[in-house]
Picture 1 (cartoon, helix red, strand yellow):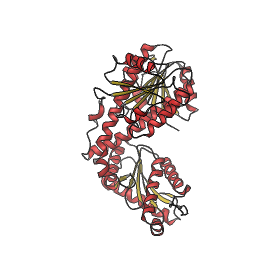
Picture 2 (cartoon, helix red, strand yellow; picture 1 turned 90 degrees about the horizontal axis):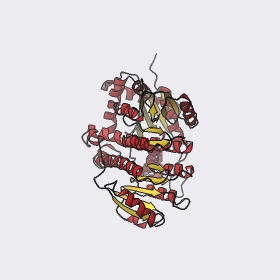
Picture 3 (cartoon, rainbow, N blue to C red; picture 1 turned 180 degrees about the vertical axis):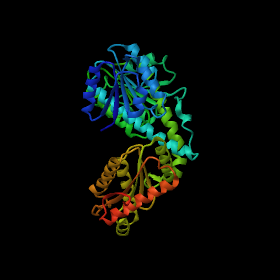
Picture 4 (cartoon, one colour; picture 1 turned 120 degrees about the horizontal axis):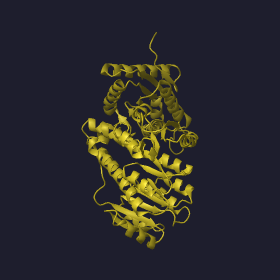
Length: 465
C-alpha cells in the first residue's frame, strides 16, 4: 500500500466513490462520517493524508484541521478539502485557515491523484528534515522544534512570474502587487536566462496556458534540477481543459496548482502558504547543514554514523516503551568485502559502499534509521513495525544489493556484491539501555547465523527454547 488516507464525508455515496478511486491506486482507505470520535480514529489509524468534504454533519473542514493540529503526532498531516462547485469563498476561507489544498466538486480523478502524490511527497520531505532536526537538537546542534513551528517567510520575498508574453506578466503583476508584500518580476517562458542567472527567486509562478505544449513542463524539470532554484516554491497556473498537463506539472515538481486560470486573490493565498513552507524548510536545512553533518554523518556514504545511531536507537526504544509498539533492529554486513578492497583497491571499495548506502536508503521509510557503524557494517532501525514487515524490508535490501552488479571502473568486469542481515525484534517495554544493547547483540548473533548459513540472506533472531 502507498499509504493510509482518511475520507470524511457525511454522504455515503461520496465516500464510496472516493474509496473506489483511491483503492485502485493502492491506498489503504479509512472512512468517517463527521467529527464524532474523529480524534480517537486518527490516533488509531495515523492517516498519511485526510480528504474531507467542506461541510460535514457536525462541523466543517476547518474543524477537521483543528483536530489534527491539537495532536503533535498528527499536526503535519495534510488535508485536502472538497468544496461545492463554484464556491470560491469557501475555497479561499479554507486555504486561509491552513488547509493544504482545496478541490472543487466534481473531482477530476487525475488531478486528485496528482495532488495526493504531491502532498505525500511534501510531507515525507518535511518529516525527514524534522527527524534530522530532532536528532541534532537533542545534542545541541540545532534549534528546538518549537523554534520552527511558526516559521514565516521574510517580510519581502522575491517572486518570479513566468508567462509567454509581457502583457500577461504585467497584468498579473498589477493585480498581485497590492495583495503581496513581495518583489515581483517578470520573465518570458521561452527566455529564462535571467531567471537562471539572477539571484534565485524564493517563489516562481509558471503560466502553463500561454506556453507551447511541453514548454512549461520542461521548465519545471529544469528548475528542479538546478541547485539555485531546486528549493524555490513553484506554483503553476492552468485552466480546466487539460487535466493531464496539470497533473504532470505536479508530478514534475510544482508545489501547488491554481486550476481554473489566473485569480489574483487565490494565487496570493497559495503563494503565501508555499513561501511559509519554504521558509520553514530553509531554516531547518541551514540549521543542520554544517554542525549536524560534521558530527553525526558518515562523510563517505552520507548515512548516520555510530555516534548518532546509538543514542537515536535508545530514543526510539524509549518511545516504543511509552507507545507500546515494537521496533526492529538489523545489523547488515557486506559479504567478503575485504576481497573487493584487496582485488580492486580501496577507491573501488569506497564507491561500492556509497552505492550500497544509496540502495539501502531507497528501500526504507523516512522514519527508519540507517547508520554505517563499521567498515562494511550497517545498523538499521525500523520504529513501529511488525516482524513480517521488517523481514520483508531486509529481504528487499538483499535483493537490491545482489540484483545489480556494481561498477568497478573502466575496463573492469562489474562486481557482484551480497550482504547478510540479522534481525532482532523488540517487544513493547524494551526501553532500558541494557535491553537495547542486548537487542543489538541479538541482531549481531542473527547476522553471524546468516553468514554461517551461506551468506546473502536474512536471519531473524529466535531465543533458545
